[in-house]
Image (cartoon, rainbow, N blue to C red; front, side, top):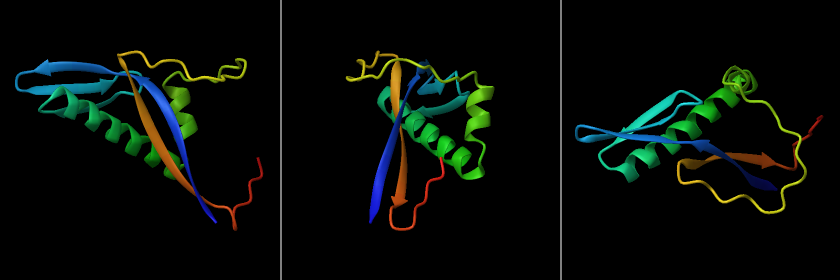
Length: 107
């Protein structure tokens, strides 16, 4: 059996108009993109960040990249309802597939 698993990261978004283009960025990760409209620039930065995180995962560097960018885990009480997403944040999906027949987790 194969399962699809989605991780969602909520990250800050910076959006600026430069001439005819909208420049989108996630300063905390230092990833940039652009688009002819604000909507397109936002969609493009989400795609760029998803691909960036998947690339880091595949190379085995995701933990090092997050630590280098200043990320650290918070030990908070369990969240029962996700907080409302602020307007200047974006949700970035990171999608995985798990074959449960052959998967053995040794965590």
